[in-house]
Length: 322
Image (cartoon, rainbow, N blue to C red; front, top):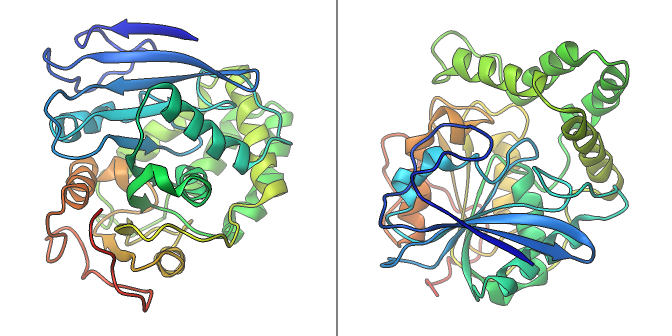
């Protein structure tokens, strides 16, 4: 096991900019090993937390630094944990025959190693796939659940796009692949419908085009993993307070698919964030951070100006906070 403590004022190793925790908070990076695969987690410690540590599991193209822009809103409330699981970010390459159960168990391995018995769980996009399986396999480790831009089945758009994108990448046409990925992840709304749409599309395009050969290899393997193993198993979900949200214009994991996910979780709430699509946590970062923070500290999420009315898709009553 490798451990490093990074000063809060230091820039991230990737050079990404973004708000960093105050000097009173310690940022720690832990190098871990799960069944022979090295991976790394990042911990922003909060000495006076208002709630359980918040574990943020992001999408396939995100890494442990992708949530720095949310830290100024979330870090004052609790300890934050992000991670590059095996096969993602800077961690070891993971062959596609290792399935979602393996990644879910890697999450539990990390929490055991860093001595965190229970977390508030957030999963966005692919992070929900891993997060839900983690909650199903290790329910004792979950206090609350928030999922965003997520579904319990592979979107048809994704299943249709993956073979084309893989062939494009194999031909070495990264620019065309980046165009395809932007179209897949982002809607094509009328002008003004989605906040920061043009800027975020440009950012996403640049991010995809600047991937290293190793990152591209991992991205292809990620798609193979999902298509091979699927994203959902109908196992029991812990009866803890739960919330699912997505952008109102999400065309990849649509609001209807979000409602399906919420209906599979006991008493889960559902809402959509206005003027956003699949990249809701990027397009409306402050609002999504506020929604996550409110839910994890038992504050009301009804009647928020940036959300549509809250629904309860499942007939079961909402569980009381743990």
